[in-house]
Length: 324
Image (tube, rainbow, N blue to C red; front, side, top):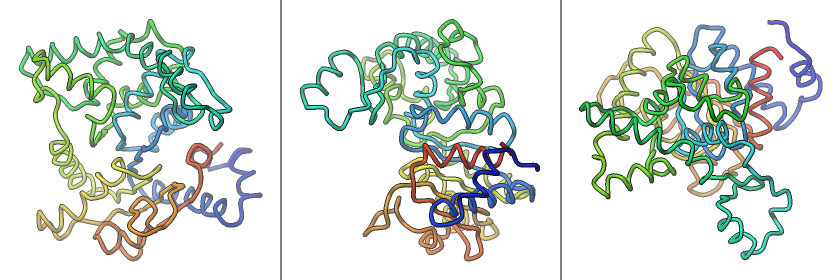
């Protein structure tokens, strides 16, 4: 593939340390796809609030991502940005805020993520009634779906189009819904929408079983990995740490240790972008080789770690893969 100016700049200037690791990881991702491999991307942190969708959506549309694992926050915050973008506020001097200033933000319905305040009330005023309607219709029909499938139903129904405040091509959830991209969302209940669903269950308005749970996500992922790995090597591109990465990477040792499917292949590529430093007991900061001892990666699996800010690094890697 002919490379554009961003990639040319990277090749010219990023030759050492984390910048070189970033280019190596991008080349490895590209080589994995060229060889016919599939790629899982995992999203931790506040990547949707950081508007990673601007580059990730294009990766999805271009077939460079085959499956996503993300937190419930990233699942919903892409849609929150989609429908309430003009109500977000930046606080460049966030380090100087006092406790009383932070409380003032709360009183205004603004939840701060570093320098960006999410207008949760404004966003969920535009989302909640629609998702509630979809949950209740599914339950009345005796149907059960995964969290992301309910989101897909809401997106594809068109009910949110009246609220769009960003170009829809900048929403990775729209791109994923249009492709019906597989997603796993471990710990979905640890999200605003998960909390709202739990409140309906507590009030007796919905049954918890209407939304499929984490064990069912793992069972589904085990089947997907087993079937897909028969045809292609599957790579693992991890943005941040936490449950979004920890949950899906474990499917490999589960299959060959607990299910005793000893021919299960290891992950065929691994990259993590993280600012978690290597320290005692930190899995998010552990070097990739530690994953060999847990039966997730093999000794010869291409492994990369970029110790940097994912909001800077991921769009650059995606730009390389897209030939920009």
